[in-house]
Image (cartoon, rainbow, N blue to C red):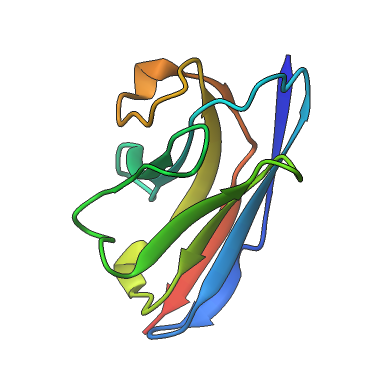
Length: 124
């Protein structure tokens, strides 16, 4: 089993920045692909960003491209999501997830382990 714990959420004004962290523990073994998802009230969960096992390949949803950056530090078993130029529509609970693959993936079915989520609220 792999446990994931997100941190770094909070309340920020539009245009501001936040950095989310996701620490993995348990049977992490060889690093797997990771992703950040979000779910806003009344909306379906959507993927925001994904990264492969080494950090050399990243993908982003069009809505965050150019504003968010996903990265990882495998020595710390931690994945990050740097969020800049935040907008009110970025308000959501953000979840990190660990995939069963090594390559980056936007398919939610490829993710087997999920964190509890961290709230991000962007005020206008």
